[in-house]
Length: 221
Image 1 (cartoon, one colour):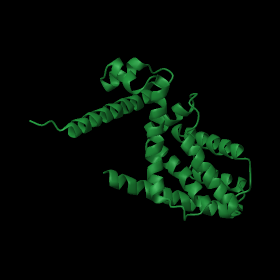
Image 2: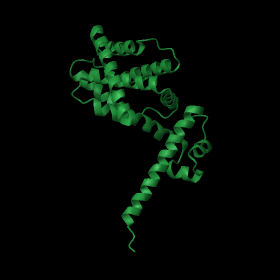
Image 3: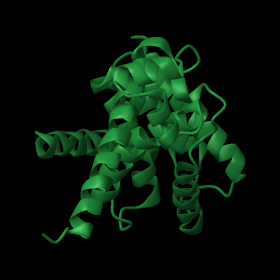
Image 4: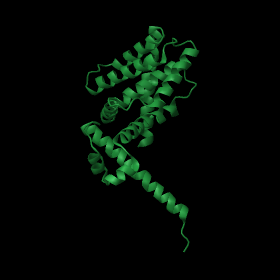
């Protein structure tokens, strides 16, 4: 009987992918409960029901696992946004919608929000893809005369720092109604938009983000 080597190889790759996803899902649960600093490899392998050797086959260090977890969480949101935010949408609207989408997901899924926030507090650094996307959007806004030509490193710090505080306020129950819209409007004003225009864009982007999230849930159901 001939052995289908391609089918066997494909099955092996599929098993490897499933094991990796099981480790990532287990890590999300463990980090949400204990935080990234208190969690150990033993916690991860126990939650995933795999051996320590299997863990090292996929992640040489705990830090490698944490990076993969954060990438998995952020990529899931990014894929959805990329599908609904074409480049034809002006930069200010795209930036505001991305921020509101992040806040909306934190509000609807606090477990996701806590895991992301705890990972951001580690020494992993920010995700490079996020910084590249942010820089591109901001430079598009500068090129069209919507945003002021500011230092990109400072812009990143303002956006990521502000977003982290908003995320914390949401998770701690400290964000009053309309808080996210006001914060995003202030950011847009800081970057050069007139206050009334910034408020309009923030409000419209919040509604767009809610619609995107609703569509995403319908497809996942």
